[in-house]
Image (cartoon, rainbow over all chains, first blue to last red; front, side, top):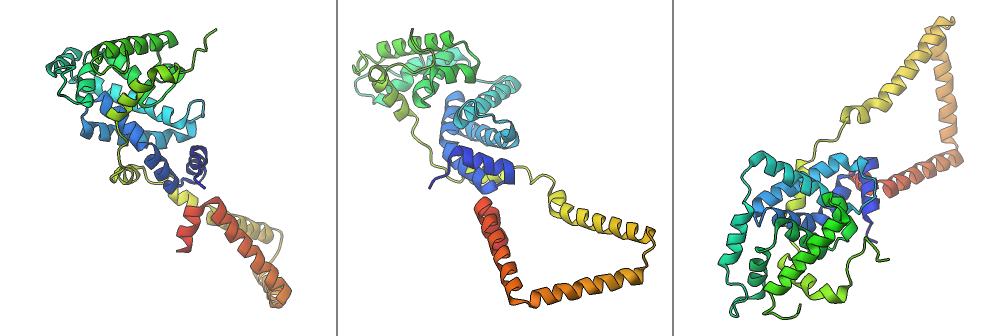
Length: 180
Length: 126
């Protein structure tokens, strides 16, 4: 029988069971690394460094995990904070305007390009917050309440960013049709 | 009233969700978890965890010895008592029923250790 996250967390807290923590890392590494790749705009090396820091921080703070959110949501919250701190320290993140210019450089809706390329181009037209809300809501499958708690946004802000992001994508990807 | 913490209906957003999930496929571990485990801090209070029971036992025995000496007991008298206790212990162990009970107790403690801490218990056995 596969142990639950709660079982593994209890083993780590009570007995410092490193094997149990390894199971937790293997179980959640993909979600955390994907989230950080999204935040770092595809810089996989930086994303993996931050993901490693995320799990080490989680290990150190595990006794403080109260279970009010799921373990995966708690990890994403740590990852988000670490990314924000790293960005503050470095001051060299890609400006939003530059990202938008990158998005426009790809011919959105061009019939010959594949869906992923068009989706990437369309995402470039969204604001950073809209992309973040869409990633957490649809890629990570978080509820509105979980996104609000994770990002410390009011619930209405989450809904607004999701609605605007979806509307923009519907418009930009109308050539693919399934959303209209 | 609309629930405030639920995702929108799936049928409306399913194509978008599928597109976004397809753009972020699951990542293989590829040694990532091993790197994380290597980066973890060393076990805290290793010395304390390993030697604290021995230190506490030794301190208790020492305190008992001091109290006995302060109450007029001689070292030779204490040695005689210890020899008598050891003889009683040897008699008990030579009793096959007592030896069987002792073995069953040890076995149950071992099983409990393996159930509560499988990884650590197995590592200790190896």
